[in-house]
Structures are given as structure tokens and as C-alpha cells.
Length: 171
Image 1 (tube, helix red, strand yellow):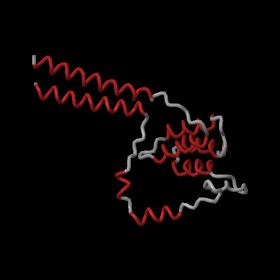
Image 2 (cartoon, helix red, strand yellow; image 1 turned 90 degrees about the horizontal axis):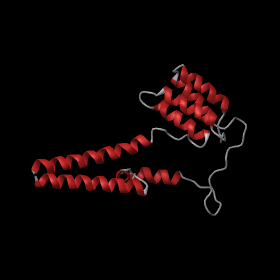
Image 3 (cartoon, one colour; image 1 turned 60 degrees about the vertical axis):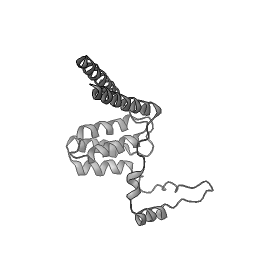
Image 4 (cartoon, helix red, strand yellow; image 1 turned 90 degrees about the vertical axis):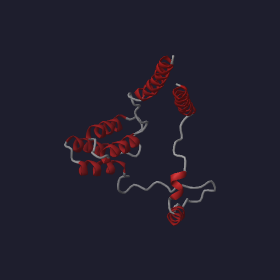
């Protein structure tokens, strides 16, 4: 009897674990970013990884060239950045991809962000206040902002762990 309960608990935990793996496999066919600027930023992130992932960075940069929204991205610099990525020249590729995101020389800068009243927003005071306070409260802030489905999966996983521990405790 005790052996069958233990096997049942193992089966339930195994199914729960495999069910979680299915959601990870669902992200394998990753969606392309909606705009070229996001794709170039993703390429830069892969390039800054340790060790740098030149293949993924080149793929993201190619996605930038294929994106419908090309606003804010220099195609020529992106193409040269892809060539540098193929040559595995990290510093040149990073410089070119950053240049692809920068506005061309001689063009007016984008307007500063404004608040509801139309006044320019100045974030310098916020940064100074943050540095004065230190960052001990940052560790306490909730960083997971999942959807309702993700919270439900998390709750089910916790319930399965609790149920499994109760079953094993009785055995």
C-alpha cells in the first residue's frame, strides 16, 4: 500500500514537472520583434553576453533588416555590423550596431519627454535620491510581473509540491 502511494506521488510530481517543461518548449519558435530598433538592441545584448553569442546576435541584426518598422535604425550600419559579427570582431560589431541606433549627425534630436502638463521631465533628481538612499529596498521589490496564467501555473506547482510532501509524510 505504501509503495503504491509513493509511486502515485512520484507520477503526479513527474507529470507536473513535464507540464512545466511544455511551456518552455512553447517559446522555442521565438517571435520576431516588431521594430528594427528592438532587434538591434537584442543583437547588442547577445554580443555583450559572456561569452558573446555571435550567431544569435547576427540573427537578431538580420531580423532588424527585415522588420517592417525601420524607424531609428541605420540600415547601412546594421549591414556592416552583421559583417563584423560574421568575422567575430566584437568591438567593431558593437560600435556599428550602436551607430545603427544613433540618430544621424545633423538631424534634430528627439524632443525630451514631457509630463502631463507639457513640461520637460527631469530625471536627475530621481537618480540622486536613489543614490542617497542606497539600494537596499530594490531587493524587496517584486520583479516578477507575470500574467494571470503564469500565476496560476505557479500556484498549481506549489500545490503539487505541498501535496507530494504530505503524501510522502504519511508514508
